[in-house]
Length: 301
Image 1 (tube, rainbow, N blue to C red):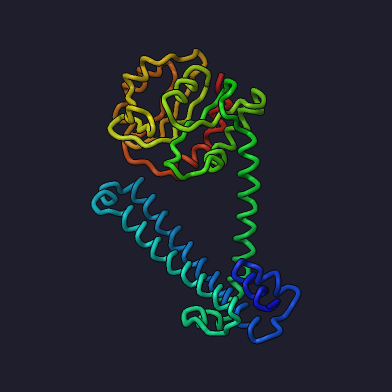
Image 2: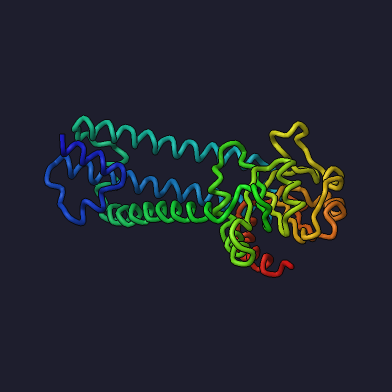
C-alpha cells in the first residue's frame, strides 16, 4: 500500500524530489516514476503548443488582421487546445488508476517516452520549474491582491474589469500590480482600487480617480457592460456622468472603442483617452500595464 501511495504522488509532481534522495527500489516504483515523468513531459509539450497558438494568434491579430478575420482562428485554437489537454487529462486519470491498483501496465505513448533519458531529464527540470512558477504566481497573487482595495474609500487609480464570469479577481490584481505599487508609494495605502465592470464602478472612477484602466470588451465604439440593464455603454451616456477634476488618463482596452475616439475624448475631456480602432490582444495591454503604466502614474498631477 505504501508503494502504491508513493506511486500516486509521482503523478502529482513528486518524482524529481523523490529521485534526489532515493532510487526506485521496486518494479512498481520504477515503472510509475518513469511513466509520471513521461506524462509531465507530455504536459510540457501541450503547454508549448498552447503557447505557440496564442503567440501566432496575437501576432495575426496585431499585424495581420485581415488574415486573422478571414478564418475562425479563435474557434480552431480552442478546439485544438481542448483536444490536446483532454487527451493529457485522460492519460493522467488512467495513470492514477493504474498506480492505485498496483499495476505496471505500460501506456503505449508514455512507455515510449519513458525509455528516453533526455525526456526524463527535461521532465525533471520542467516539473521543478513548473511548481516553482506556481508558487511564485501564488505569492505574487496574494501580494498584488493586498495592494488593491474594493473601493469603499476613494482611490487614485482604478482598474475596472470584465471577468467574463470565470476569471478570478487576483488575476486582474496581478496585472495591475506595478501600477498599484506606484500609486500606493505615491499616495499611500488604498490608492489603487479594483472593481468589477459596471456603470456604478465607472462613475466612482470618473469622480475620484486620476487614472482609469477599463479592461473590457468593445464594439463599434461602445463598451460591453455585462449585468447592467443596458449592456452597451457609449460616450454620449458617459458625457452625462459626473467627473472629478483629478481625472487625467483613461485607458480603454476594448476592441474597436477607437472607432468613437473623438466622442470618447469629448465625453471625458480634459482627460487623455487611449483607445483602439481595431481588435486588440490581451498581451499588449499587459505589457502596457507592466512596462509603460507605472511611468504614466508617476507623471500624474
